[in-house]
Structures are given as C-alpha cells and as structure tokens.
Image (cartoon, rainbow, N blue to C red; front, side):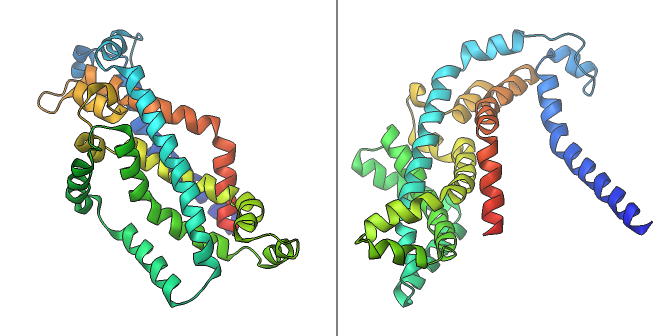
Length: 273
C-alpha cells in the first residue's frame, strides 16, 4: 500500500514539475497569436483565432533569417572548437597526474567560477587592439575562450575513467600520443561530447552580453540581439515581445529535436561514467 502511495506521489511530482516547466512556454506561444487588445482584455485566455500578423510584423523588421544564420554559425563553430581543443587539452591532464597538471585543472575549475561580467572589459580592450571587434572571428574566439574551462574540466574527469589498458594495447602497435588520442580516446568521447555540446550550445545561443558588446553591424547580429532591437527596452508591446521570443527560441528547439537521441544518450552515458 505504501509503495503505491509513494509511486502515485512520485507521478504527481513529475506532473507538477512538467507543468511548471511547460506552462510559460505554452503561454508564450499562445499569446503570440493574439492582438494587444485581446491580451489586455483577457491575459490568461487562449486565442480564439490564430492571428499571424504579429509574426509577419516581426519577420519583416527583425532581419530574422540572417540573425538565425549568424547564431547557428557562431554556435556550431564554438561547439566544434571547444569540443576539439578541450578534449586535446584534457587528455594529457588526465593521464599525467602530477602537481603541475593538478594546478591546471584547478585553474580550469576557477575559470568556471569567474562571472562573465569580470571578463567583459579585458576582452573588449584586447579585441579592440587586435582589430577583432565586429567580426565573426572575434565573437567565436571570445565564446570559445569562455567555454574552454568547462570543456577541460569535463573531459579530464571523463578521460580519467577510461581504462589505460586500451592505450597500452595501442602503444604496442607503435602508436604515438597523437595516434592514441585520435584513434582510441577520441571515439570514446562521443557521449561526453554530446553532453558538453548541449551546455555550450545553450550558453552561446542565449548569451546576450558579448554579442551586444562585440558586434555593431546589424547584418552580424545574433538572434538574441535582433529580438532585443526589435522589442526595445522602453515600451515593450505584447504583440512584439511574444512572437519575437518564439522566433528566437525556435531554431534551437528544432536542433534539440533533431539531435534528441544523441543528447539523451550522451547525458545517460555521462551519468553512468
């Protein structure tokens, strides 16, 4: 009897948590199909008809397609760089355990604890002197540097759990350090890479501060900046806010749906490791 009660309570908690997570999203999507007058008269009501004028207005003023392509290019580039460089840096740190490598791992952990606003001024000054402001290369380098500590710390823990016997067998076949990493270690990092990519993509796609700071050309704006420029910060209108928020989140949601199986497999395998 107690077991059934606990099971029902567990199901109830799951339902409550799911509702709490999805309710804001459902509300945002529903309000995006309503006019300002309808929202003012009944803020919690569902739309009686699907009014597409809000989306037409947003698409015509946001330069939406270009901003989505910008965000996709920046996000995917940063994810690839962080995954590759982070795994390459983590491999010797995981295998050569000494005082020096421990200090490097601790510095990587310290990088995770450093607030982003602390690095804004140094990055801006350095990039200004190097001529990297308002360039795709600059924003990609900035995001890669900000996320590399997470990758190094994450991959170091994952590689440490891989049996060394696999590497020793490869070295018997005259494989060097690079060959061992590329042909033995790297293929085993798929689950870790999927999990890491999830976090990196979320942080890069949703970041607002650094694109606002480093990019000035409207043709190079990311989705978040385009949404901000469209909605504004003085007189926020519901018919502009809700469709812009939906359009800003939609591409990332589509990516997650496409790669859902790999992401879930990566998170599960990482938990088992």
